[in-house]
Image 1 (cartoon, rainbow, N blue to C red):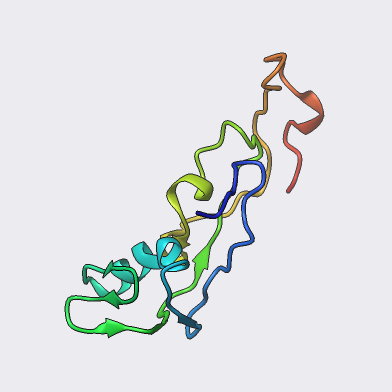
Image 2 (image 1 turned 120 degrees about the horizontal axis):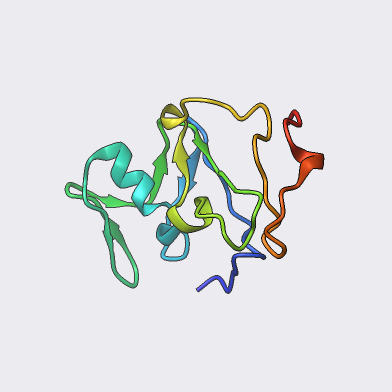
Length: 118
C-alpha cells in the first residue's frame, strides 16, 4: 500500500501521549495494533469505516508515547520496520556505548567502533 522498503521506510508519524489522529483506511494499517493495545479492543475495518468492539471510530487520542527503534545494520536488523512502534513503557534502558561490531561484508571486527560512546 505504501511502497516502502526496508532501506526507504516512511515517512511515518510517531504518536505521543495526547496526540489525536484522524483514522482512515490508509493509516489504520499502521496504527491498528497500537489502538488495540491501548484499548484492549479488537479493531476491524471495511472499505469505509473503522470499528472497535463498541463503536465506529473516526479518530483516536493516544494515551502513551511511542518509539521507533532501528538497528545500525539496515538489512539485518529486526526492528520497528518489522514489528512496529514500541510503547515507551516497554523501554528498559538506553544504549550508551558500542560493545562489539562486525562488518557484515567482511565479518571482521570493527576496532574503530569498540567501546565508542553513542
